[in-house]
Length: 272
Image (cartoon, rainbow, N blue to C red):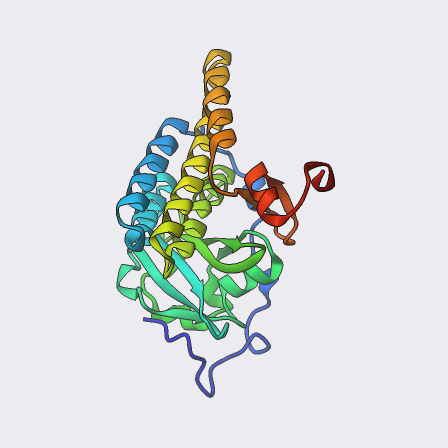
C-alpha cells in the first residue's frame, strides 16, 4: 500500500525521470480505435444511476467495477484530494490493485497531481520510472490512464485505469469512456456528507447526464430514436425543479437551465 505522506529521503520530482519521459498521451490518437459499444455504456450508466440512488456512499466502488468492464483493463480507481490538499487518497480501487485501496499518492508528485496541474487527461507508460514509490504496488503498471474531475470549476480528484499487460494498451475510445464515467465521480463526491435533500438533487442531475449519454448513443442509431430522445430530454430539463449547470475546466459556466439562472440572479439575456 502506498503511503501518501512523503517521507524524508524519498525521491522528489527533481530526483526522478522527467514527466515527458513517461507520458504517451498523444499515442491515444495514433492507435487503432475499437468500435464504441454504446449499448454496453448505456447499460453501465443505468447500473450506476441505480447504485447512486440506492446507496450513494458505495457508488465509488460500483464505479471502479464499471471501469474494469467498459475499458477491459486490469485495475481501476478513484483518487480524492485530501482536505489539506497535500495528497490524493485512493478511496476505491478494483481489480489487481484492490489490496492497495486506502493508500494514495502525494499531491505535489504523483500521476493525479500531474494530471490536475496539466488540467488534462494523461496517459503514462511505466509510471514507476518517475514515481518510484509505485514499485511498492504490485503488479507493476504498464499503462496508467488518468482523468481529472471537477466540482464547480475546482479539481477535486481523478478517475483512473491501469493495464498490467504489455499487450494491453489504451486507445481514444477508452479515454472517451473514462471521461464519461468521470461525471459519476463528481456526483459521488458531492454525495459525501450532504443532506438527503441535496442527494435527491444530485440524483436528478445524474439522471440528466444519463439521458444525455443515451441521447448521444441514439444519435448514432436512427433519426427516429433521436427525435424521441430529444423530446424526453427537453421535458426533463424544462420541468426540473433543481438548478442544473455545466462548468468548464476554467470555472466558466458553459450552460445553465432557467432554475439555475434564477438562483444565480441572472436574466437569460445577461447570461447569453
